[in-house]
Length: 473
RNA sequence: GGCGACGUAGCCAAGUGGUAAGGCAGGGGUCUGCAAAACCCCUAUACCCCGGUUCGAAUCCGGGCGUCGCCUCCA
Image (cartoon, rainbow, N blue to C red; front, side, top):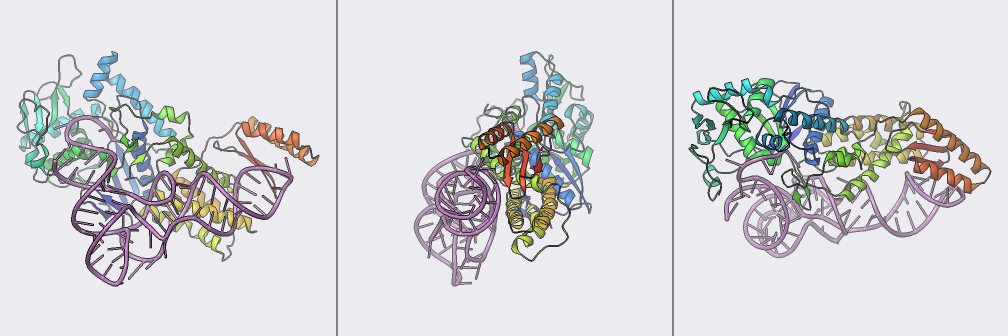
């Protein structure tokens, strides 16, 4: 049984897919008007883990994540740099895709864009006008918020209290301050599409209602996004969809916590975002990916480079063990010791942690427990069994969490490293420890870790997934 | 001002009624040419403060203090 926190009800609810065995998901993607930052990566990685876990549990998952590739910010930015809005958006969408790929995020099944769904949006707005949930004013179309008696339920606020003391000017023609634009009329020099209400572009919220309907149907299981989208975006989206469909569009609303810096939210408009390209130059992608998974997805995550470095040290323990077990054969038996029990029961406990509202922090705790048990087994004379069980466990965990690097190192580098290790062991046998230490220093500086043990010298490249090797010491 | 969330060891962080996961850092020991890794042991009578409910609360309720988020740019 998988349980998920639902923002609408404010409680943990069991996941009951509308179609048994299938889970449909829609999440709000980015507005591509600037570089991708860490805050964009968090929900992407979180949903990647959710998808992988659901698949592991046997569900067929359909995942849709949109791009809002036309809006005021894009138009403004495009005007500033003298580039067409479509080119600006395309550039940043490409960058986003590349960053997500580096983070090991599976591509969505559909990645619809607003500009490719204008027809669906226009007909959606038309239906809302016909049913009286929307009205035209000065070339704009507004959604009549008070037509939905449940408006405010999702974000847990009361409509009457919401607009008191609001100091923004109400746009001319709006019946009510809380009403929001479904269609915005365009200035002559702005990019626009023809519509029954004149040339213009869609408002911010309507695209998600129209595109989720087109790609997932009239109702779907999970809707995701950052908690900062709860209001107004998701509140508005829900109101539109309820008005259009006559029923609830979403089974469970799932919101991920924000990343903060100095306790303040990281966001493009505050200019305190850490760009992903910058982070990629300083940390391996699996470290960044799993750093985002090191706390529960609903908790705020304070960005601190020292924490990432700490996390990298923790991961290196797992990686070192993986280097030791990755070629192990399947185990034949397991002794009744405590460490063996941990290794054999790992899958059950690991998946149970994720069943519980996708608790990745707890899932990692189970991985570290398992790592300790594996090392105990190896140290206590059951290396074959321990390695075999551990290989299976790490592959399972990695398939969902994605903490192991998978970049291969050129063969020639490996061959050179192997010869250096060989010469070092010759020096050690000759008790020429000065030369041996020099050779080890060269290997270390090249990214190779050298470990002398009773079974010989193990060596591998940390953080890059080199094949490494073993030589008799 | 309104609404909401959070406050757990030196640091990060799970746990939400039954007696404190995990990570980092630190200390002691074993092993080792040295180192690293690994193994063994130690490091919160305790979960912001004060009341209350309960046989029992970090977990529920009330009050207080602090931090953050949303209140139409936002993942």
